[in-house]
Image 1 (cartoon, rainbow, N blue to C red):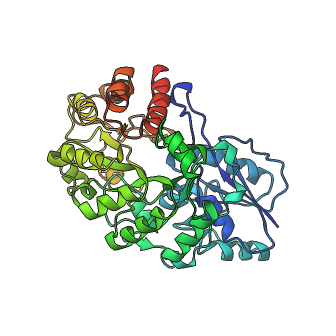
Image 2 (image 1 turned 90 degrees about the horizontal axis):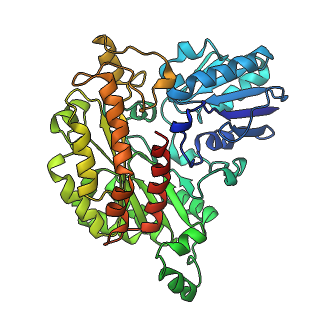
Image 3 (image 1 turned 90 degrees about the vertical axis):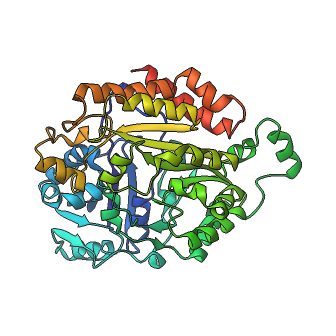
Amino acid sequence: MKILLISPERERKKEEAFLFRLSFLNLPYLAAVTPPGVEVKIVDEAFEKINFEEKVDLVGITAQTPVAPRAYQIADEFKKRGIPVVMGGVHASMLPQETLLHADAVVIGEAEEVWPGLIEDLRRGQMRRIYKGNGFVNPCALPFPRRELLNDKFYFPLKLLETTRGCPHRCDFCGVSKFFGFRYRNRPMRDIEQELNTLFKTQPVMNPVLKKILSLLSKDLPYFLKRRLLYIIDSNVAGDKRFCLDLLTLLRSFDLLWYGHAPVSIAFDQKLLKGFAQSGCIAINIGFESLSTENLNAMGKGFNQPSRYAEAVKRIHDQGIGIMGTFIVGLDGDDPGVFQRIIDFSNDSKLDWALTFIMAPYPGTDSFLRLEKEGRIFCRNWEKYDSLNVVYQPSGMSVEELEKGMKRIWKEVFSTSSIYKRILKRPWIHPLFYFTMNWEFHKLTRKW
């Protein structure tokens, strides 16, 4: 038996095409729980063309909302050829009946638990229409993802690692918590250590003398040359403090650079913050979301305190850790002045990287249900649900003002003057890492 797993890619406008891409773990995890004796091939359509004439017994497709229309096209093409198709992921889980118009089966929620049974049903010719697990996957039972099925040359040179799943916060715009559950599930530390050993080995990045020489140019250069870079994809790496401290101790022993997601509140926990710094953390991705307390309370993220944002940034920077900040615009409490406020905060606080997105009310989220009930959603074209386009009527400005304002933030934050002030002007915080990222986005916004 042969299975083809596909990550679809929608066609982007030239001015919206991002310049680098990360690998992914969802399909390699699925491949890892596929029963023995079954051949698995993964195709990432961002880099590889799909061969619709390939002889396979099953096609599995995963897609987030903006890519769902392309995923449906792919499913229809294979079904025309009599090949069964199963679809999963957040979008399919939220809209299974829509997905079943194109697929033979839908997996709702995490797929690892039900995948072996689905394959067995396929063997017997008895594949069901809907598969849903009895609960959430036990992290202790997860095998290591089959990364060897992805072509490393396609992706930004860093490894991805998952240490937890789930998030207890109920932000109204987020579908991730519904998909993975509202509590943290931690993987056993011994499993994480073993997986890290397969990726990096517990050894110094390079000879101490050579490292010292290269560090005169940049302290990050040895790690970039040896590609000892890690991205922890958890929604919140600091959600369980005791687990996080153990993880930080483990990461420190591998002599690498890493980044991940954490709330702004870690700035006020000195023990945790020092642990991040000593472990090789190069960046924390923080969802500031808004500079308005009213907005944060409305979205269910009232634990963020905008009055302490500037202090938090300084505390994190003082530990030599950069900040990748994200913001959302188009919230009901936003007025046309929100764009300048975000630009000013990003520059004044010297955020090392800052992205602002239009609020996207993904299907199944509280924000979608609320806006639909209010009759404010005017677009059901899922390709537009990419946080770069407006799909609902904002309350404090026009659709045009919101789209232009979001692009204005990007253009000003990634302007040469802003990059100089935030990245190149001393004191430096990992300038090699952040200048490269900022410059890529500068080139992107010039197309606008």
